[in-house]
Length: 389
Image (cartoon, rainbow, N blue to C red; front, side, top):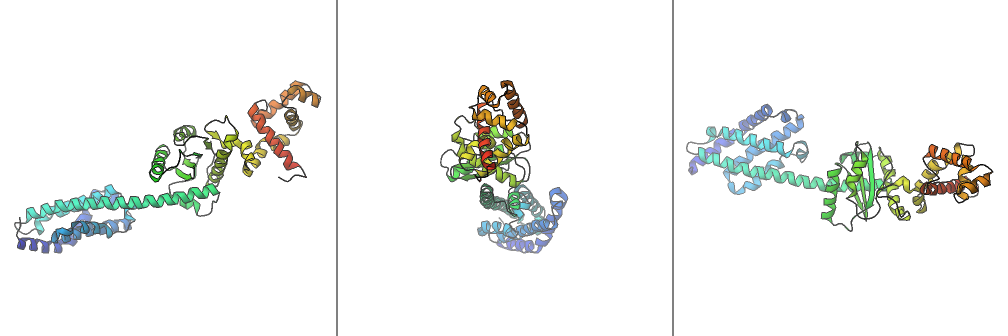
């Protein structure tokens, strides 16, 4: 144990050596760590500020060990909060180890005779305090950043749900790590009412399957917007278990935020409309629910259904549109449609197959016939001069 006189003398020498120790620490960082050399000038100055503050704080702590926690915490108050984004906790601990090593290596120079052991023990104790303080600072920064990201995510998803893609939305989405590209949109129901802890765990589960996914919980609706360049089928399978009972709807293919907004709105409308199709698969595409979405007042579905299942057939000309309309109006009977049109049933069958090849909708299939029947009813209403649609 050093005497009070030796401690006072050591403290005087320490105060005189702080600048030299900080310079030595920065020189060691520059020579030992490539990540430090690669930092921009501003970030390097922040690290230098922390190193200098760490040495000054050790001097203050050595003078009054009772204030160890306060002194250690003040080291990181010397640098801006952006430091935790620019320099990882692992690198910060490397800075701390380097500063401690430099101070320890010079301890014989500033320790008064007989106080060498006391100084080394003080350095070891203080290094523990400063390491705990670093962990606390980064944990607090992560918590604050997590809360901010959660609020920002809620704003972005809410804007997509409403279809409000303004000029600022891309930058807000980019701040969450989203970038334009093939995007999977899935909407379904949550598994009952979720508390804060359950919601956080659900988000973690989803992001393990789809890193960077945007997740929104709107009442009972769970909205997942996941970027993925790989097979969306495999991703869909992984995400499906995150939804509660009931329909799960996949939005149309999307790349840009405008398309993602449309896909999100289509999928939300699909969740509302899905009960009208009792044997709908799970998950089901929003485009496969176009007739049901029309029934719940989805104008986007009405326009899309006409565009893909009515207009192409009408534009093809010939007798295709008349044949489809007659076949549907005759209760989907080939023989009755043929007699009504005064043609052979094989002629009707040929024309129906030609429509299936052209549009992908096979009127001989019960489900496809329902889709085409709805599309033709809407198309004829639109084309009527008496019924605005």
